Image 1: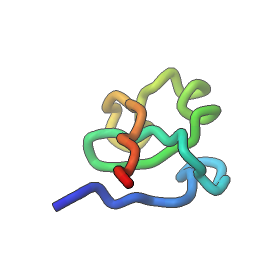
Image 2 (image 1 turned 180 degrees about the horizontal axis):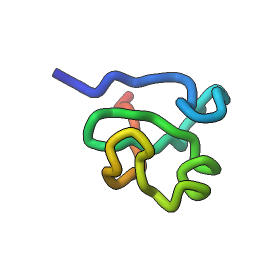
Image 3 (image 1 turned 135 degrees about the vertical axis):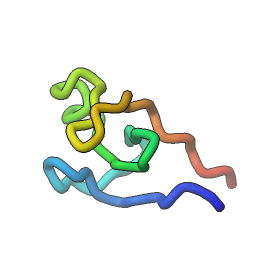
Image 4 (image 1 turned 30 degrees about the horizontal axis):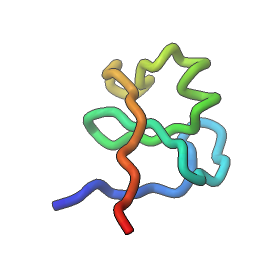
Length: 56
């Protein structure tokens, strides 16, 4: 089972291109919102890390 590749930031709603950040529960945020939240997920207080890129 792979990651659910969400296409929008859960905070600001911007369409995500390549740089997205996720927590262990796959909450998904853009880079700007992630930095604003100090890399902490507001839903679970987990660490937000760069989402792996999909292989071609």
